[in-house]
Amino acid sequence: MHTVIRNGRLIDPANHRDETADIYIAAGRIAAIGAAPTGFTVQKEIDARGKWVLPGLVDLRAHLREPGQKRKGSIASETRAAAAAGITTLCCAPDTSPVIDTVAVVELIRRRSSEAGMAHVLPLAALTPGLAGEQISEMHSLVQAGCVAVSNGKSPMANTLVLRRAMEYAAGLDIPVLLYSEDPWLGASGCVHEGVVSTRLGLPGIPACAEVIAVGRDLLLIEQTGVRAHFSQLSSARAVELVAAAQARGVPVTADVSAHQLYLTEMDVGQFNSLCHVRPPLRSQRDREGLRAALAEGVITAVCSDHQPHDTDAKLAPFPATEPGISALETLLPLTLRLAEEKVLSLHEAIGRITWQPAGIIGQSVGTLGLGARADICIVDPERYWTVSTKTLVSRGKNTPFMGWELKGAVSHTLLDGKLVYENAH
Image (cartoon, rainbow, N blue to C red; front, side, top):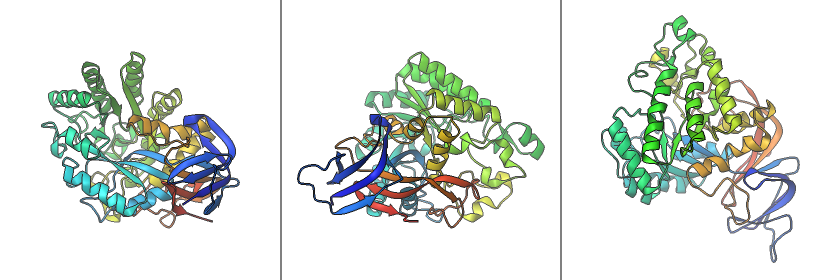
């Protein structure tokens, strides 16, 4: 279908574009910007006056719960939520059940996402079979089947030799390794940040050094092997300092942060608020400010959702027995745009952190409005406020500490390969 989006403010940080112009779409790709291409016949028109036309968002970590935990969510339900959030490309974490360690599981995920047709789902291959950390997975066949990177999910790697061998294998294949770094012994029994709140509430803590020590070890292995590595969901200021120093030495490493870590701290746990039970845990205010500074300095180049939908029962037990995680797809865009309002980032930097920059980390040519690019587009009403509630969240998971927050910036349309997959006229 030939589609034109008229009168919108096109913001494309990848191409340094910021202008009011029409955008023409044909055969699922961007055919022209400004003037219509020769022979273009408009079949569908979208008026974006007063709105921003952005590249579809790219999310480096989402747990879609399928296969294995369909009571919490499914590829169909969670990609529908992604479309409502303006996210057109997302990485599916490998800790499904069964784990993404066979070609059959990769093919299942790709088929289900294709059937749903709401977002491009890119599977992350397990670094080790079953995420057990004992031997190396068949990375080559998994990448051939459609995985864009390898990851240890949220399973800390205890065996340093296995991690080194896995990095060497990935380096030989030239595929990125996404690392969740946590010392498996220091953080094993904790459920909140080790600090004043854990002491006051009598909860077992996870010290910041559990992350810092693991990041330090991983950086040495990255230098040793030359692998393209990416740190997922950093939570401590000290770990970020280590990454910054490595980047300054020319080590090929990048990092991201979960959006909630840029706003919440251990203090939000309050009186055992299980909606704030996340992994890695919410840390101190000093850590939060360190993460924001690293984002502003370009040490951290991507913001992810770390979307983890849960059923209601998962958050009703005593705090340590509840399941960690936040339903976070639909708050990713407004929370990131709020960083621009708070002058942490410029508007272009904020949008870049959730479009072309995460796309570059996994080697995908998305997150841009360049000519000939895939027409994955998100149209946003930047002045519209909305309140996070069980009614406004499309995801099956309603578990978010942002419940009741009034957020600014609402998606009105999402296009995937030029096809309208979400529309909210209100």
